[in-house]
Image (cartoon, rainbow over all chains, first blue to last red; front, side, top):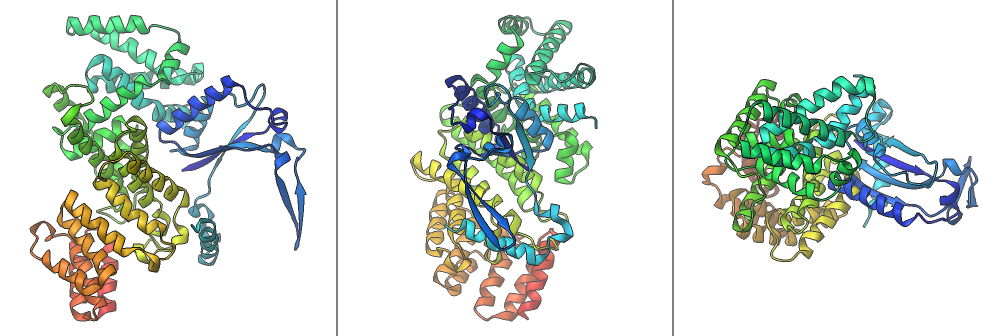
Length: 140
Length: 417
């Protein structure tokens, strides 16, 4: 299974404070471990929400809101995509991750949906629709 | 399973290979190393539910296993020299859990893992034994899981592993990474085992399932681990590239009823772009390391041609035919020739492809290979020779043991008549 492993933002990460040398080194080492174990598929750190934007939807209306956003603890500061055998394996890996922030921080693990998870609701038409979307995303 | 048991399961999956590899270095005995690692696991299962999971479970398991190793060596009064050497290492390594953990994350363990991989894939073992031992020692799979994956009784796999360990012990195989001329040959054996595991998952040769994705994931993981351990070996990256790109098509290979869909008919939108990107990067890595591409990198290059084509019609068949021509020179085999025939059939017309297939007609090694009549049938159908094509597809159906493939071949036979 695949899991998205999400590092939640903090006031510091939102303020654009860069991690210390020690933390960068520890994270680098952890990432190397993940790669060597064949677990890491992808991973990125994200710029503060001040450099991002949101599009809100209401019926047919679309409304663009520039960052920063206020609910800091719900924001994402970075993510990995991991290939693991189980949620427990992902948890075991996160337990050995260095604290990604100075002080308090949260890492959230979310399994990626497989097509089978949708069951009957994922009709052939919906599959086709999703397929078209993927085609556009992936067109080289 | 309780939470703690599930946690132990996960820790085992992450730690077991390094644990066994480290113990095997000290004991010079893979079988004994695995036994002691298992003992440590049992101890964890007994203690952790009460004490809680330690902060560094890997270091805990290693310390426990080492203690057992020393106990056992003392009890059995094994070779004195081995014993002293072990105690010496133990003293040197008798340090805080943090220090052990620190080292565990450092590179020297990479060498241990490599030794374990090369030992598990040793040519003196049968192919079946290599596969079982590799999944068990390096994949962290239980005997029951391996048995399920290969649809054989658990006792068979257990026997295979016991016998393999005994052969290794008896023949006194050096527990080391081969060097010089021997390396190329031994590495080919390792890559062969990993690719076999992948293929068993990707194109299940028997039974009802067209794919067993678990085995593909295990093989990919082993391949990625090996690429991390041997970053200078182009063929390791070649194999990883090949597996990543093939695995990228997993979602597109069957329809809603589980029936197989052939490459050119697949909905390419379902191909996994992340895996394709990883595969292309691995292939690039193999190229950058220089030299002529090896058989895995060449096959990956073919797979990359398909991955890069947005539609089946845009496939660069002349390039694929050229790659197969190189492959036929580097690693000649009737199967490669058959693939070349398919590519030539697409690049230069069915008649030219058919000529290459017919040149293979008497090849004894392909006599029972269902894809020979399947390819011939396809080329004949494109030339409008429906009756002959139908007979070929019928023949292909009788040759494959995979029931879904049989059904597909019969369907094509009907369609040609």
